[in-house]
Length: 190
Image 1 (cartoon, one colour):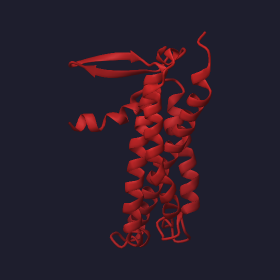
Image 2 (spheres, rainbow, N blue to C red):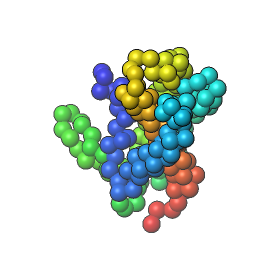
Image 3 (cartoon, helix red, strand yellow):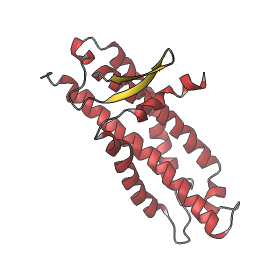
Image 4 (cartoon, rainbow, N blue to C red):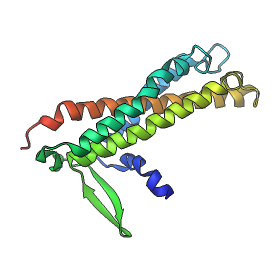
């Protein structure tokens, strides 16, 4: 049952030469910059305050799951036959377990987009919940009363970096999905 609930994360297991850039390189690079600018003079994160970035983004993040679910429904019911053709070379692949066997599957446009928007739905819901948690405990996180000194500062910076990485991962994957929906989906197969 838990395996089924975590299935949207299987998007991260898709293999493609360029995909790691969208999933990890760009989000981590942007997150490092955002984290650097979010650290105050005393080396503690400032993003959890009431009028900070987490608070300002929560309204935007709250609307995203509905958008992603609508995109997922549109992809699942899209009527053009060419959406079920394999993606061009190098065709992304993913290992799926069917009846106890691991099978390497080449992805169609429909399956790739469905996996992508399923992942984005999961990540956006997780970010809404994480944002709410961070805001509700923001004072204790930003002042890090649990740990003193360097350990507390490191915890605060690490939490900020993780938050920004998830956020930037969601944004870069969203733009990649929009590129596929807006342009690649309508490209003729060669």
